[in-house]
Image 1 (cartoon, rainbow, N blue to C red):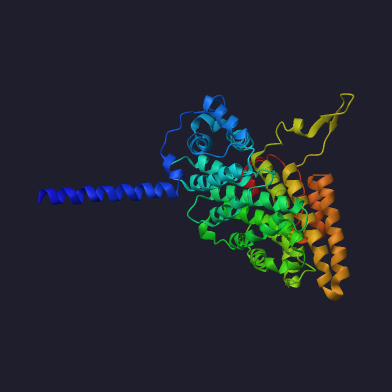
Image 2: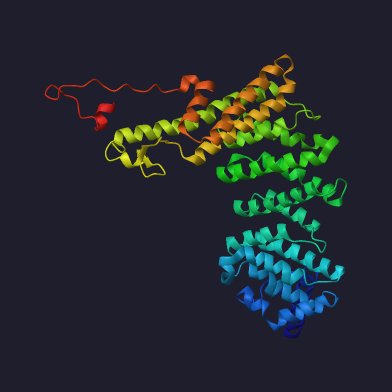
Length: 444
């Protein structure tokens, strides 16, 4: 009886070991996944005898053997997440491309190495066993990996799309993967029409459709806005490549229309959506042009109110705190080239906020102009409005001052203008019962 139990136990262990070895054969990266890297920094790996032998072998035309595979998976790619490289992660990616792939001369060996890297990088991007920075770096490297001819690796496009669409991943990894897809759109745009690059890039449109319709509960607002803004940009670039197949972007356009109508979304994202939709004018995609024009008018007012409101808030803050009234002369005085004190204009709106307001107005003006052709009898009116709006936007860019913002508000949203408060008449101090000027209670 004891002999029978022992025999069955041996058979069970043999079966278990056999299953494990079969799994290793089917997925070679598992064989090296648990190995601790020997070199804790990339500089150590670059100067090692193992790396010199790797480069020498593959430069000579040798095929990609098991020892090369071991170095790639256990020493090369782990450099992306090792603490020793944390201060130079972007440089690590560039150097890994150079030492691990650019040294391979045989096309078959290069493809073997890149295919292994694509599989392993996709695994690292999803891994919970390494730092989040390591996963981000793996996703970025997956998007940057180049083929022997210098183009982005085609086989990485699908894994990148899967990472972008995976709701279980942290937003930063999904964003890193989306950047990789954007790189491919740019590459396709710069390639000749009809090239394999242009043909293959159409495959990312379903991913764009998912991103543009991401539900609010799936991502933080900032991450969701960023991903959708980039998707709108990529879709605009892709539109130039599609030609007569522009209808492939119909679902993306529907997502953009939904964003423009959603007042809870950020102004910038809604403007980017309007810009994308305006570029569809003249294509086979039907647009609710009148509705978009209504939204555009609303966004012009909101953009100006935001900038003008910032100016008024800062003025009120200065008045209520007394800052600028007491010892504020240095802020209001400057010096000419001769050193003579001169009064300078005081502006409350930061230059960056002025430039953003300028971008918003010019973007909306150009969108109105593109959409005006669909407004029938009102086309000329909209064209004139677009030209006028663009003039104000350019003026804000050239003269980023409070006065430029105020003049635009007076032109497009006069009801928002806050009238200047006249200076109160002089009051006899002996009869004065109200608090002094610098007190906030008087401002009630």
